[in-house]
Amino acid sequence: MRGKKSLIAKVEEAILSFTKPDYMDSKEKVDDFLKNPSDNEPPGGIFKSRDFNGTQVFTFGDENAENTILYIHGGAFVGEINYQHLLYCFLLSRKLNAHVLAPVYPLAPSSKAMQTFDVIVELYKKLIMKNNLILMGDSAGGGFVYSFCQYLKTVNLPQPDKTITFSPWVDVSMSNSPYDSENDPILGEIGLREIGKSWAGDLDTHDYRVSPLFGDNAGLQDTLIFVGENEIFCKDIEKYVENLKNDGVNVKLVMGNGLFHIYPLFPIPEAISAFKEIKKEIIK
Image 1: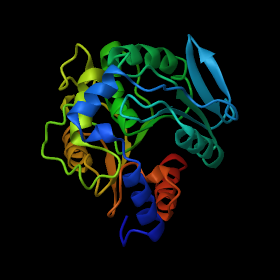
Image 2: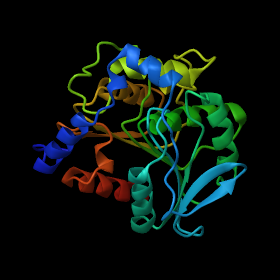
Image 3: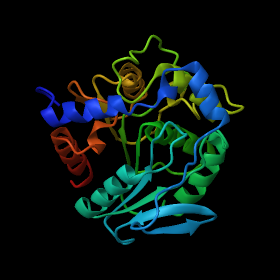
Image 4: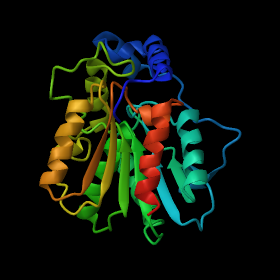
């Protein structure tokens, strides 16, 4: 994404900065948050969902559509799926002739990573016979997508046809310090590091099942990654892209000039360009 950041993107960034969770930049506040998490319920009402083995799954589009997208939402593994995610899934279904499924997966601090693997594996098994199966995710969900693809090799399940991610969290250990938390309107190094430990549970935070940056990518299918130039995940994502290339994976990185975390999901002009890239990748 070349050129200057749009005025609308600047306004959106200012709003995000004003609403940034205080636990992202404070050890005391993130500890308190993890001990006493706020109520966290998925939206109800206008979007259709179904029960799958006790897990709520939002669904969009025709089950017999040309493309199937399994969407893993972000939220630092502590934030529930929200209207932003659901509206984006609706858009994907309408514009890409896709059946989109968005599971309400277990979250930290009450649940740990491997519990979510169990849930997503069972759902994934139901989808592997679909044509053009795409795994997609944003932020924490994007990182989970790559961990999940690495994990699939250990349980003898086939890879999806393609993966697409927005600002994937590829290293929950946050080991490439320092990070510029001050200028990120959404995320903070201190909070993310503690949340990463909670999500990992008994796993080391460098385990590929929570930090795909440290995993083996050999055999993974083509992937498209979007990242904002000004977000704290940028350098970790660039490092992961090099790992993917070294492991023989066909990867395309789209850098949002001067932009913030998961910018393609926001109502800004740059998101239109990002969607065109996605459409080009999926609809050949």
